[in-house]
Structure formats: C-alpha cells, structure tokens
Length: 377
Length: 143
Image (cartoon, rainbow over all chains, first blue to last red; front, side, top):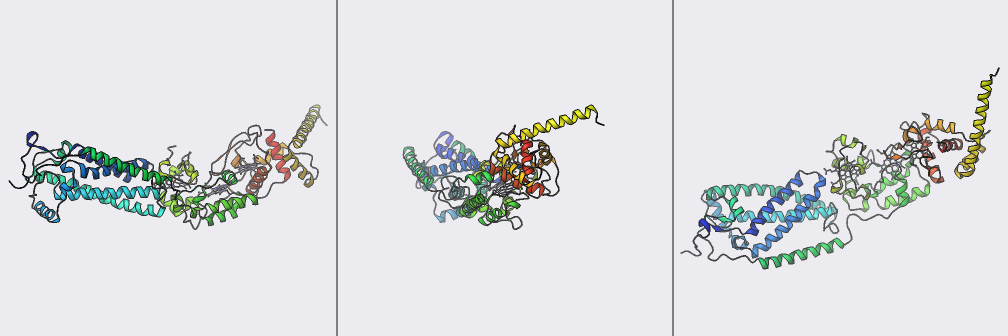
C-alpha cells in the first residue's frame, strides 16, 4: 500500500473529521461575524456595544483556534493542511479541470481560505480594538491609542471588513462547488463532523486531540491578555482629560441653555465669543469683568486643541460664517446630515443646539455612541 | 358736582394707595436691594413717592419696539403671567417671577443687577432706571 493508506472507518463507512470544538468554533464564528458585520454596516451608532462585544467574542474564538491548531484532533491541526506551493498549484489546476484531487481534511484551496480568513479576521479584531480606543476613547486601548492612530485603524478596519465580505462569498462558493464536485455535503460535515468520502492519502495514525494541554495554554494566553489590558486601563488617558470644576462657568453659562463643554470649540472662538457677550446669538449675555476674565481663561485652557477626544477633533475646524456655533461646523453638519430636520424639532429636542436632547453625556464632552438616543416625541 | 358715590370712590382710591405706599416703604426698609433702588430713584426722579406695582405690571406686560426684535417684551421669556413658568430662547425653563412662587428671587444683588442689565437692554434697548427696577420687583412681590 502507498504510504498512509487506511481503510475508511466509522459508521456507514464514514470517518469523523471535524472534532466537536472545531465545529463549535466554526458555527460560533459564523454567528459572531454575522453579528459584527450586520451591526457594523446597518445598525445605528448606539449599537456600538453589540458590535464591540461581537469583536471581543471573535477575538476569544480566534485565540482558541490558534491553540487548537496545535493541540486539536488531526484535521484541526494547521500542520495537517499546510501544503507546499507546488501541491497547491497542482490542486488548483485539477480543480479548474473540475476533477479536484480528494483530501479528507482541508484541501489546499480550502486551507488557503482558512488561513486568509483567520488573518483578515485577526486584523479586523486588532484594528477594531485600536479604533475603539483611539477614536471612541473606549475599551482597553483607550489610554494608549491616540485619536489619529484610531482614525487610521478605523480606515483599515473598514477595508478589511470589505475584504472579509469578499472572502466569505468565495468561501461559501468554494464549499458549494467542492460539495458538488466531490459528491460530499461539506456543510453537513461541518455540522455532524463526519465525512464519507475519504482520501487515499489519509494519515496512518491521526493525532488525537490534547484538550488538557490546549486548555492550559488557552488559560495562560487569556491570563496574559487580561493582565495586559488591566495594566493598560490603569495608564493615564490620552483622549479625555478632565477639566477642573469651574463654578462661575458652570453657573453663568447654563442660565439660558445647557452647558457646552469647553472642548467643543477652539480657543479663538471662545475668546471672540467671550469678548462680545452682549451680542450673543441675538441676546445680551454680558458678565461683569471678573467673571468674564475667569470664564474666558477656563474655556481657552480647555479648548478643543487641548483634547484628543472625538468631539474635540471633529469640531475644531469652525464655520467661517458662524465661528461660535458648534452646530454650524462642517464636522457637525457631516455627522448629523442623515438626521431628518423633524428630529431636531421634536419637543424633547427643539433645536440643533440642544446636544443634551440626544446625547445624554453631552456635558462631559464624551459623546459616546452608546449614549445617543433620538427622542421619539 | 360730586355725587356721594364719586366721593366715596375717591376716598377709597386714596386709602388704598396710602396702604400700598405703606407696604412699599415697609418692603423697601426690609429689602436692601429695593432700598438701594429707592435711594437712586429718589435722587433721579423728582417727586418720587414710592414704587408702584401698577407701573411694574405695565413694564412686565408691555410690548416694546426699541430693543431687539426677538425679544419685544419681558413676557417673551418670562411667560404671560408672573405665576407661570417661562422659557429662554434656547428653551430652558425659567421659574415664575412672582416672589410667592419662587421665594429666592430678587435676593442676590449681583444676579439682580446682571439680569436687569441684560434683559432691559434686550427688550428696551437701554438699561432700566432705578424706578423701573423698583417698580418691577414691587409688582412681583405682590404677586
């Protein structure tokens, strides 16, 4: 017999190929990737928590899979389906002739897809985490990722997500074509774990799974990552620093409207606004000189340029015509352009200037996605 | 000729304004802010005899054309009666101006000066006189 030929075993001449952990991994990944893609592309901004929890789940699954790639049952091990380039090319040619060579586990094309998917998904998880930390000032990297790093990561995150959608299409197409050509329902195999058509090149002694070793390595990895995140979370924040309380500012600037956070306009806008308070949006908001000087100092000290938060970056370019109005900045208009005018006229909102009507954390300058609510009345 | 009725009515009006004046003097004495306005009013208004709730009421309700077009009247923001809540132009609620409804009003000199300065400029296009300020507070104190 040629090397490693082994008769088919198991019920009805079938053999178990996909072990239970790999199958659970596969279908959990399907569910979480679907959640991530749907919430990322279609859900409103305030579903960010669902999106990021899908991401954390996916990260856990990928780490598990990398461990299982070493300690899993034969066909789950990466070494089972790492092929030389020559063999991959040969397989591709036979596939294009619609007579693909048969493999019990992943064939070379399938293997390439597995590696590509794991690489792209890992990239998505990492870029997502950096974006969450840098742009949104949330998650374990909030204290280390700057806004600009987060923004770049966000662009990469989007590009990789597009690539992932393409790969998923190819993966499903490949599975369907292969199922037809090999007369084996591969989707059912990934559910039951069994395959009926076996390769002549079956390994003589499939390596058994080593669940205890896998668990130990997984636990160590989880512990390391967990402690790294804890340490990071304890570092000084890059994004939102806190402004010291300023009672005069808080009292005088909240008499007619909600208090606007100093980070929402650049220093020059605050200086100009404070120099002409008697002409304040069609109203006289004049103060005595002591209060005016002290409040100006507070606003300038904590103006947009001193913050690395999302809002401070978005609104620091002001409108030429209305240099004092946050809701007139190009950034503000861009972010809010899809909100119907009627939503700003609702009794609970009334005007674009009423940030608090839709952003429950407006006072802190955070404007986290999770804290957005469009009032229905 | 005076009928007994007009005589009676005149006597009544006299008696009532005397009481009102008494109340004002009393209020001015116990309220340093009002006393301050009374002092300046006496200096600047010949024949000043006291603040009038009636004039204060007129100031509160009247429509003006000399100020900003967005704010033709005190009632634009303070609501149509001293007992009702008002609203700023940025839609923040304002507690009623009547002292009986919002007891801590007209007690902080800095706050009173600030808002008279701002609101009179917005509505009348000029600062209010001490007489107007005293009348306004007197009116609100009776409400």
